[in-house]
Image (cartoon, rainbow over the protein chains, first blue to last red):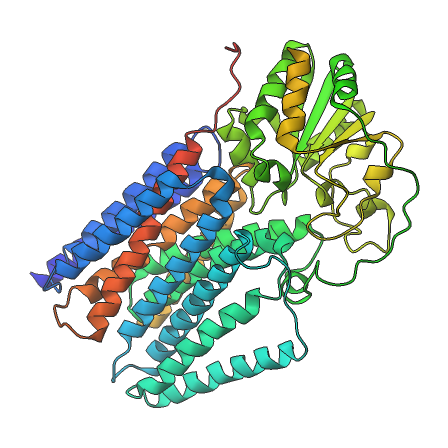
Length: 454
Length: 96
């Protein structure tokens, strides 16, 4: 009877895995993505129901309380979160996932654990702990409750190495004597500390990489927990998430022309800004003059960056886009892979403002067309349109693929002030012959343009 | 033997994951991430067994905590992904 029960549960896990895989496959196209998410959610439901019918369960009280509490918090967060704050929310959720795996690993330890089990428990505690505190720091940096700069101090690498050695040592001791919980607590404490140490030296501009990586870790932690408790659905689902996070991390690194090691250890954006000699002068433009140029334009490209999110300008941008189209212009959006604070952040904000997704072009699609563009409007983006990446070999971002707005006939840069970008790098674009600066709050500036049109 | 079997599953899932995720367009990367987040809440499945022992010991409380945390991921992750994906629309011929 109980083996029958076990068989049903295992078969349900197989079905759940199939649903997860189909769900991810459907996520391959914007037209089917929503259905894919529903498939994936159905898979999760099947897996949870299967876990609940396990005959080993004696009391449902705390299971139900846990699901209710967590479910209510999750539902409230999902409903209330602003689209501009998605990176913070994903960071927090990554952290919760990590902590859950840490707790499962911890609870799975008992006196007669084999060395293999102890290793998997240590891995789930380690990855889960790093994910948890690392995500909290990332959350703090993204929400600016912590300073977004990179924190570095002398001897940082030494301290980190000591922590790693401490974790390995404690793990070795634990595998020799699994009844001695002190070593497990040491692993937990050091893992939590290591998560903090790993993320503090990373600057705010590199957060897209960090949350992709933590996303991956949250999956790998689940995977390790699956090994610790011999559960293959945790391994399948966890490794799918792990793979997803790793791919996003790679894409982000490639888009910044940097290696992962460089992102994790160099403290980019905190160091000294080199004094590039930029020739030319800043040419400001008034809203009225900008309107005259736009009115005559037949091909307009809009390049949004995080500044658009900060100014909550996506809805007025959409409005301007419609007015330009009514005026006979073709309008496209050029989205750089690292624009915003997480992969695909700009696309979600523009989708929220009802911009159709086929109007959002990736960097490689928009760049070849840029020479035919009459006006490129840069809204709150800086480093991702910086021509220094192509021209100035001494620039820290030299070699990074950028959107070549400077090859458009005219460039408008909407900017609050002349302060340099998040990464603190001088931008020669602002001094180019064909660049006009439209200073002020992006939302107000665009609002002004809309008033001129109507 | 269990170790080999589980490792086998791990290896296949990782390769499958790479194949699947590589096909996701950049425009959907945020929903992909929050959807992946929801999937990583799969830990709830492991936590349920731990929380249901009725033993009133440390392991049970840890399990209950893990159930709650993972449930945040599962419910929050799927709902917010759905909310986002509902906003993605294709360009229509006629404009309002």
